[in-house]
Length: 104
Image 1 (tube, rainbow, N blue to C red):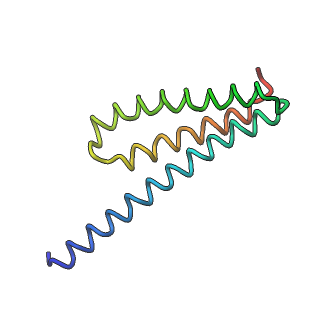
Image 2: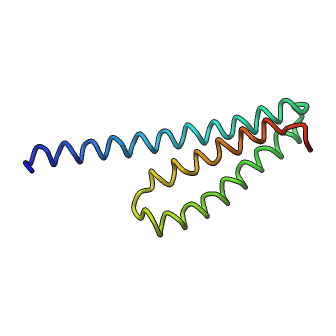
């Protein structure tokens, strides 16, 4: 393995890590959007927005705790993977919240 190949591999890994992190942030925003769209669909009142935003942050906190514990055991040092998994979970939950918005 040459020095330039090792440098290219590290550059690719850093770029890939950054991409995972940005994708995780985008998916977190998608999850928040699902909550906000559901709040709008059920009337758009202050209390609906307040409850959905609170629910999003509560679910995010719980999922971060669970995924961080798993990450500490299985992929230590890869915060980008943790952020990506939390983003995927929140995007799925946000979609489900929007789909089941009238089933209260």
